[in-house]
Image 1 (spheres, rainbow, N blue to C red):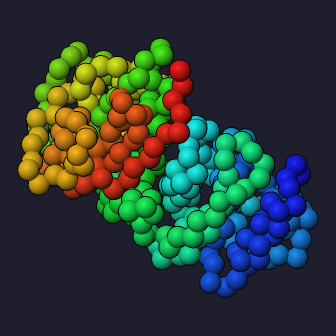
Image 2 (cartoon, helix red, strand yellow):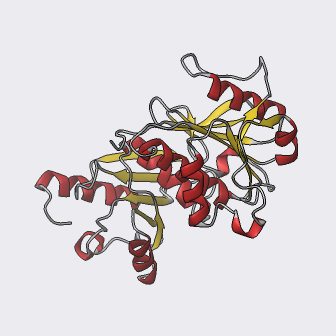
Amino acid sequence: MADVSKFDREFLRSVLTLAGKSDVDHLLFISDHPLSTGDMRGRPLKKKLIYAVTSDKAAEDLKAQHYQAVAIPSYGYARVEKVKVALIAAASENLLKEGETVLCLTGHGEARAVDTLIKINFGEELEDQVVTVDAMNLGSDFNSQVVEALIQLAMEVGQQGYEGHSVGTIIVVGDSTAVMEKSRQLTLNPFQGISEAERNVLDPKIRDAVKTFAILDGAFIIREDGVVLAAGRYLQASSDKAKVPLGLGARHAGSAAMTMETKAVAIVVSQTSGAVRVFKDGEIVLELHQTARRK
C-alpha cells in the first residue's frame, strides 16, 4: 500500500503478523485498496483473508485472483458500522462460521491507510449489537440474501432520502399472512396487480421502486422470498413487552410490537437520523448509524 506513513506500514505489518497466528480464523480487510504483493510476501494469509470492497467489479477481480471477497455499499459509515456491514456481507456468502475468531481491519472514508482493528468472535455481539444476519437466528424460512438486500436498501433510504428530503420507513419481512392480518392499507398499494416475478426485491428495479415509495405513510410488507406484497400499510400490532429505547417514536414502537406478535422481522429507517434498526421478537438485534446524510 503506497501513500501511507512509516507508522501506518508498521501498524499493518503488526496486524498481518497477528492474523497469521493459529488463534485467528479470518482477517476481514475492509478497504478499496487491497494488500500489495510486498505486504503478503512470506505470510500464509490467503486462505484467511476476506476482502470487503465497495465495487462489484473489484470484488469479482479479487475472486478471479482466488481471494475471498464481498461487495458492500459505499456510504458514509463510521468505522464500526463498516465492520458490521462487512460482517453481514461475509455471512451472507457463508464465508464465516459461528464461533470463529475474526480480525476486522478498516479505516476512515476512502483513505488508503487502515487504522482500526477490531477482534470479534463471530456470532457474538459488538457494542451490544448483534452484527450478523446469521446471528439473528431468523430460521430457515428467511432468505439471508433477501434480508441483507433489504438492510442495504434501508441504509440507502436513510442516507439519500427522497429529492433532498429526509425519509423514514418500515420494511416488515416474513410471516406475511399474519402481518397482513394485523395491518391495514393506508394508501393505494402501488404493487397491487403486478406479477410476483416482477416485484421481488432481489431485482434492482424493484429496490429502486421501494426507495421511491418510501415517502408513503406506512410500512412495506415483504414475503420471506423477497416478493413485495404491499406498501403503505398501517401496523396495528401493540405490545407492552416490546423493548423500544427511550427517544424512539411510533414507527419503532409499532415495528417492535409487530415482531412480538408475529414471526416477522422489521427493518426501520429513522427519519431524524437515517439510522437503521432491525427488530426481532420485540428487540433491536442490529443497529447501523450513518456518519453523514446526502444533502
